[in-house]
Length: 390
Ligand code: UD1
Image 1 (cartoon, protein in one colour):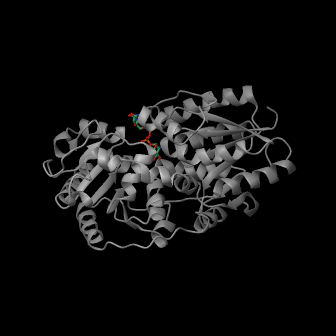
Image 2: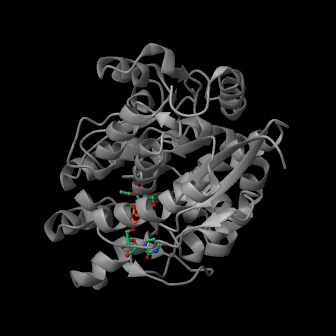
Image 3: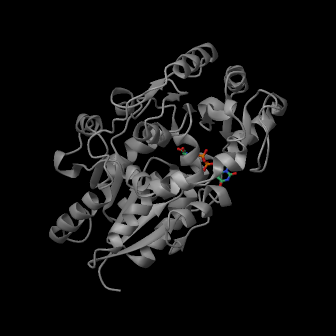
């Protein structure tokens, strides 16, 4: 097929959610030929293939099969393989999303070949350089040619870092495109029945937990403190924890298996009879996870995207980090930053459980039309741009 060849790069679970509406919108433009590149940073079925299926993402045109490793190993391997693909395929543009190692690796490789880079979800800053994602965000933005932002403070961050205003486009939040377009399927998921959460009245209130950041799970005393606090919370409400494989790995490494209740399959459990501790299950697919969150009394997380999804769903969210690169979810949404102090986590969670009603308010342009805006801008700008970097 003729048309400009745009590579859309994905590597991890949250990338798939962001790329789906973009691929769909790019395909509808007859002048653009989108090519989906999967680095293979995430490879387990529940972390990758199940998302492709549920999100109607086409099978990747190019799969790099990189897998796990240290940060430099992973980033380096992706750069080496992605450069080969770029040299062979000569894309006109590469589009990267989010802040993961695949994002920075592909941006660097493309940039050095003078292939223009578009970064979706640009300008977010936690101002915490101990987070690998913060390094990825800052560096990707510095070498991108199109910077698509989700909120006003992202634009301000980019301007402060010396990025020229004419490269920055406030387009809204692309994850919300996916969320809104999948709402009927999300509400139709039967995950609550499958887990036994509808078995009796007392199960009506439950909390959802996600935890995977190195700052929280790679240090045994921090992890233990958090799990202890969340076990205390489990005495009041069931805490369901769809666990990232790295967290389960760390819990095993620290020999902490006995302090949580880990079940390696989704089945109907009788929570009245289960131990009143964190109930960990394997990672869930997109629809099931969103459904579980949408009916929860409270979500506790160290993820970035979940802070945004709970804001749109109107579900109280406690962020188990000392900062957020998404302050708009605190200012305008349902997010509260609690850090990893066990006492503070428990106290805030118990307060939130008492105070049920929260108003839904999504920030400007979190409206389901972000992919449309991005493609319109790229289409317009690309016509005027000679091949190679601006
Ligand atoms: C990555 C992102 C993080 C994002 C998260 C979403 C970076 C620096 N981090 O973190 O920002 O929030 O994805 O999930 O890019 N593993 C598996 N199966 C998989 C993938 C990973 O078992 O399919 C295990 C491996 O032990 C691996 C570890 O998880 O070593 C970490 O995976 P990695 O891709 O390095 O980072 P994430 O923690 O997933």
